[in-house]
Image 1: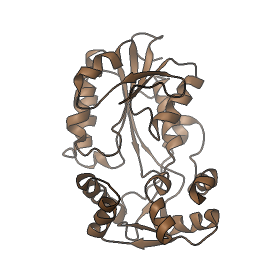
Image 2: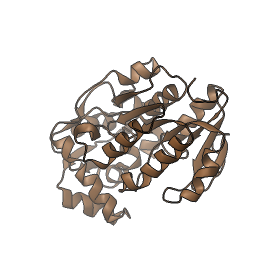
Image 3: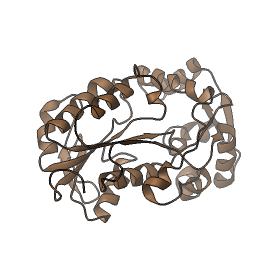
Image 4: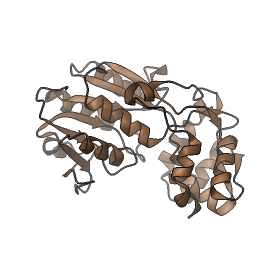
Length: 285
């Protein structure tokens, strides 16, 4: 076990989110004591709730109290990752807390990328760490692209003909649980992917079979994409950030497949087809 106190608690940031919630469940199933951090501070999945807000360092002390390991990630909707995450890394390091940090695949391509600067801050912080860089979430088809599927029968994103090895949020959570409950992975970084790279058209065909009606893929340009998102209530800064990170998809940089999920968890990653079957009711709703 990592950390100074083997009986210490594990802090999970973003505990009410798509990765955080299954991570809390997985850690509790392993017998760990978990502090589930969210803006509201409510208990999550039976774990102790604690209020935490990025950009408000006055919430950090209570969150880190009694903690020797922490899962650190920035929920969706934020674009200033370096400004918000670096103080959290510093707070963890000051308390000798091991950090499992979730960033994103490809951020290590250039040290000027803000997420990479957060990684470098953690690497130099002097505490045990593991870095997880997931590819595009398979869950985005439900959480972000479903309105287009419902209203027009299409997934409309600026991905061109690029492919991505989509990864299930459950696999990210399972990987984080392993990293938080073992020291054999300390000091390593992992690119988390699914078992195969698919284009959005191929993924749409899989969804068609599960939903029971035709789902197509329409490649669009960045400005059209931003307009769709802002029209749905997404802030313009975040919409433009999402458009920006489709550039690596179009360039083919998100098509690689790794064995990281299996290395971390002991099981093969979940395919898009299995994810779709598992989420069939929600996709059809």
